[in-house]
Length: 188
Image 1 (cartoon, one colour):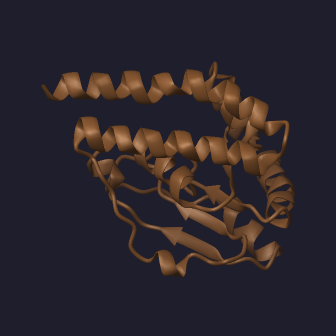
Image 2 (image 1 turned 90 degrees about the vertical axis):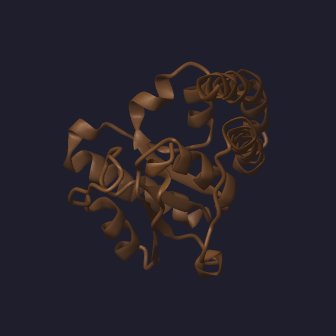
């Protein structure tokens, strides 16, 4: 039964991407804020599906510590769940992500419309420079810049050295770093 519920979740939540993506692309014509609102609605639907079909819920503690102004967010990447929660729960944002994600049909097109910082991780210093330049633009636009500081998905309970781009971005722009701890990787 668990596998059937998970299958239904995937069909409904990810199938909704096919509906939301064209709406998001149209909304993008009117700016980042309307497109982001469409994406947030999809994320909230996906989280509702996770709760309804799979019994998976979440809670946020410390929301009062979220800054009122744009900042750099360090978020551990251990599952898909935290990526959906961050979209649903944080204010206007832009993500640092691997550029290959924007090549995924529909889902990636929606990501691209949300103005991410899509880097080629094999480029090293050039990728850091891209994060600093585009990150400064996003912060100036009032967007939170969401970074997975380890640069890739990590198994829950493991870690590796953090990349320097997020710290440099915050330091050069006099912005705070908001670290987010979570346990999503143990549940998804």
